[in-house]
Image (cartoon, rainbow, N blue to C red):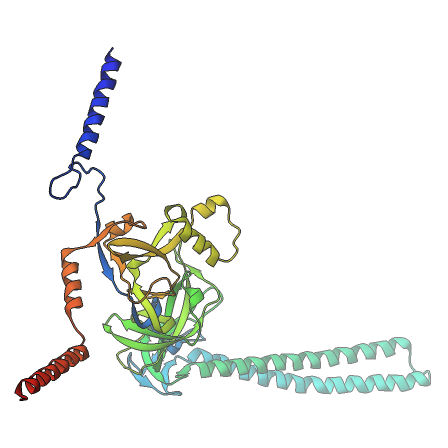
Length: 459
């Protein structure tokens, strides 16, 4: 019984709604109860423009000299003299520092004395070798006449071989001592360190009186100072792996220093690393990119941080719209005609049905007679503000660029309306005439006035 009463109650409510929907007002003849009327979305619009557009790749980097040399010691010694200070200009061959050479001089004197000793030993051993050689030759002659025994012959030959070996050993030791003398002479030269290039002492790590250590396989050694050639600078930038395929040698670039972030400095890409580097502690891979600074400004100093912008592509006469005009829609959200047009433009790609349905398609919405119309577009290069469109939109059309809430709800055929502020701007722009058209209208008005005056003054 209760179920029957419920059904009768619902039927009565439905009949009442249809009855109210059938009633119409006397003035506008519209339904009194309009429950399905569509509410227009408030949107903003913009017209396509023709302009130059440049695609940029941005990356952080550090400024450094093209030529920079770290000065280290090749021997272990104490710094006795250092006539330069940090910031000094030096020329190639100028004295940078002088190391204590007492130990090297002592070793050199010892090596010289050893050479003299070995030469004297050789002079002493050679007469014994000559005597042993004479005895052997004499024994050979006696053996021909059988005037000596085989034992005497062997004894003399043994003495000869020993004397010869002593002379050869002394000669080898002499060669070794002479090599040591040359090494000590080179070490003596290394106690005087001179500038290898023209430049500036950009960093001074050691002081007079300190002991410097030579570098080994496991020890980098002491870096006494660093000389930088500031006449030519470069930037070592870190380009993200997503952008690095677009970067190539010879591309124009500009960099912005932290000290003058609004002043661009021209640069040029020199080379891009063939292997990436993973940032420690982060799942990010960057490629080291070297850029030559095309400026001789002395304000650019080594160690400065710079933001680099590389021009990877440009169009001089491109049809562009604001980047927010291009939206992504899934295949199932678009009309069949748009999806079919998209598939015809694409190359043959073997995708599964699931992957195909999950595809996103780039489109823009155009405002036509207060209705949003979807247009399939092929975006080109883009910068931070605008994106190039290769077809899909005409110059005289208005594309919808926002707001974001409205863009997310837009569909083909959806009613749209401009805000009051945008309507006023559109009316003001439509009311403005071209200066040439206004002058032409004024000339026509003056001509009509002159003709009327001539007609009225004629008899």
